Length: 262
Image: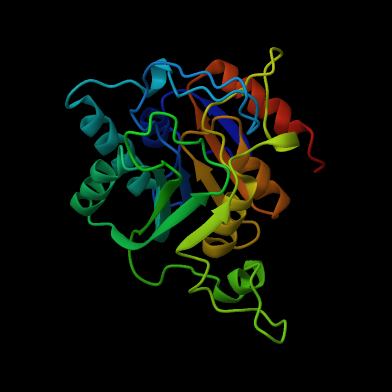
């Protein structure tokens, strides 16, 4: 098992064959949401340039295929988690049902569902539904005695008491306000479009890594994408493992991580 490495391949296969069982204390997964559809170009939207609805081959599943896919990779993650390990899974209303169902079948305990409120979410163009301005992160644990660094998260909480002291998290942890990735943080192609349609904010990853891991421990991401998990883990003095099947994303993540000093 190699650390601080990107494995190029199918995550379930790599998890089963390359990662030791009971070895990883923290996994963050941002799987396909199965919501691909027709592209929508909003020329005047300033949030990261024009917004393009996710329309990727890797995000398209038919019928029961998505359920089988979710079961396979979540089962593989459970195998490599330490006995008290944490599995955080990013999702929306499109796939949270499958994630919760498969997690329960695997015997994982759901500790929290964090709501990420996107303060610069795409406007409600169709005017046929409520504005889609939130995503979720389900926090599962494999067993008892899971890690939760309460004091570290109090320091992370931007809200303070009236006296300016670190504040408890009931006003923050279950509901975190962060913008969709934009500006210098957003990785882009040569044509200016986002390099990855669902790049997650570094601040969100910082919250998760601080909450459920210690320095020098391993953080694994089975859908590594542009490498945000590894990038933040390295800055927080954690080791990391990335798994990504898309060759273009492997190249982008490798380049991004090489910019950080050892």
